[in-house]
Image (cartoon, rainbow, N blue to C red; front, side, top):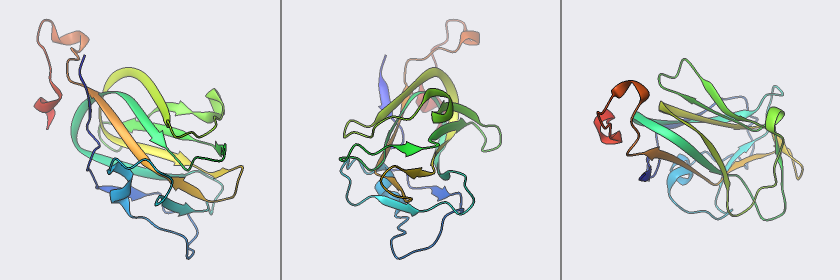
Length: 168
């Protein structure tokens, strides 16, 4: 199994728009996939205006068989983000939740990030959402990695080997 981070360097991102503007809001999307995993600089999504998670969507610009997503929010002080959710979609219409803190519980942010592992599925869009933390009402993203399995064989493919590069 060869896992490849297919998010690295991708910058086609957008946010949910339900965040308050402030001097601290910074949506420099290139930071999300640049490989730098320190808390500064991060993307600062400010605060939710409607009580729902602020979400970032990343377009992988092609379909990949994804089995893992790793997220770094702000870390270093034992911070916990609430209403964390990670969703995937092949078409930006039909979404599947692969992690929901309301079901699985919150977790302490660490410099190791949080890895979400799930059965491989065909994905183009990744959406990560958080609403607020136990430190303040702002939302932060440091890094996002999306891992595709280069050797995944779909159950209906028979003996045919499908490589992620076939979908680009």
